[in-house]
Length: 125
Image (cartoon, rainbow, N blue to C red; front, side, top):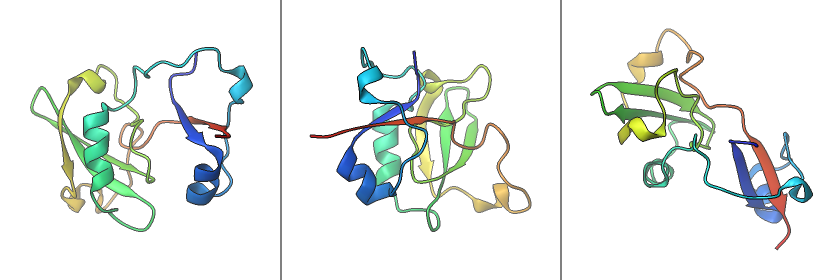
């Protein structure tokens, strides 16, 4: 079972991302289900509608149901944040696009402030 896989048409992958690495072959896929680790689509869609924070990256914050904000810096793919222990997609109640950049002014993102490792599965349509 693989929890973090982007399924994408091969020509879209080539045109959008060039050579994709870390792949799983379509022939190895037996069943496809929604990932329990994926940022809910309504929040991911909102982040994708916002402009990039910089060339090739996005900085955003997730509003959590306890009132806190989790800041993330990822490439252009936002669907799989590296969730801190005890927090997951079910805890997200909103997103903040273009949050305060001071959070990372004097440091890079920590282990739970970036994207998680994922795989690609490309297919021909």
